[in-house]
Length: 553
Length: 80
Image 1 (cartoon, helix red, strand yellow):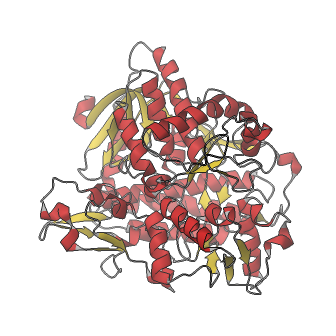
Image 2: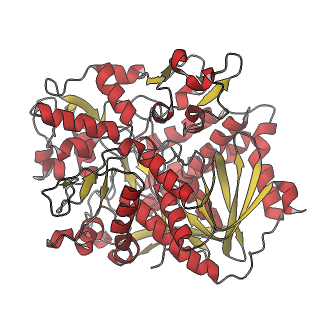
Image 3: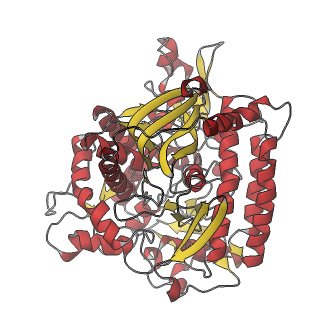
């Protein structure tokens, strides 16, 4: 069958899957290298991804003189040691693929209309902060962070990148062990799309959500973008690429019920957590208090919950009027800006009078491609690394695309794309619309969450995770019984199917990590953080339909 | 499933300039909702939240609305 009879066929040099921060970086990198690029996202470029409704700031070194203000200085914070912020990123990769772009892309944002908070007395000209336990003042807050994604999107469009939104991607195309494109459907029109490319950059989310319920009980009110259910990780797995960090489970303290932490803003101004006894309980766990790594704060808060020492609060009563104003302005620009404003107003919060109640329900998963020193995965033609922090995501996306363009130049012609597998995928994609009866996607997803909560929750073991894997496998078998009434439900149905498959990968990887302490869960069979796991990664992939797991590093 | 869910946003119809001007589709609130939760209600030419229980409360619709017609309405669990 001719390809064009199966759906709309679009060719490009570099196909970028995902239009969030990383995908925008990739689009700019590809365009600056002179290639044609097409960015595909489920949402619209102006609002999709984590910073759609705002971003607090940009982390970078600025080379003003002090030792901390260098690429090496910030590399140590992100990549060095057991408590590094981006444990999946090696110092070498950071120095080669991220650090060189941090300043140029900061300048690029500025020329695109992003305003940074200035300080004429600082040698850099910017007001700089130390957040999240940083040893250097690497954070510069945005003045107009609420509009960051719209400004970035404008810059991407100005660069001449092609953009297509409202596409749910379902499969990466592989031919002769090379990534050659992807397929998906437009959930507004229902049209099936076939994208062919010389190289593919995977910029889809590094975080997967909806495997755990939130405090409100609604899994969509999550601490990160809840429309990510592990599609990138599942598609990369199906394509045969090796992945790491699937066992990563992270969380954050959240203002009660609100799916937005805002924590750096508060703790950057020296707010502190207190328990029901009004004690600064974090100090009992670590003398660094609020400056300890985020996952340790979460674990300490959970311990207080287990002890029954709730409610837990963030105490800002010592804030001056000026600090309150700064925090409110900053949160209003940070992710979820409008929701933060509503939260303060509708709850009538006066942070100088009463501490703000915080909770730590829910968690998110991870998973990245295992890449070489130019961001190419183990599958030829598939590039991409997303560290998940705004400036790093932007820079790593940029670098990945630059490397992809170099590789694409070696190809004289577009790789062949076989039609049989695409035909089969198309049938699978639309099947839920053709069923007379079946489960609603939400009923199905609720069962996935129940299995994850009960067996792969905060406290787990080999036995509990093995049981979860059995149940998730059975559940995957029921995926063929979900019915979708319309294209919107078809979108959610495929998100749910990706979720049940993602949960299996995440649980399998977690089974392999025989320690606790680097994430927000505890294995009762391996309760301690072990030095022999420093720098080690669990790798998971499939070969000829068989799952493989190994530990590298 | 959604008809018993309190809408996550309030749209001031007086300020919905896209509706008043009959602006070309898709309107910013509809296209910029990352959850595809908002649709056009054809009968009265106004945006409506079709999937309120899939809202992230991110406020993208608030940011994108050219008439500043949208306000977030927190769910009960966030208010108490």
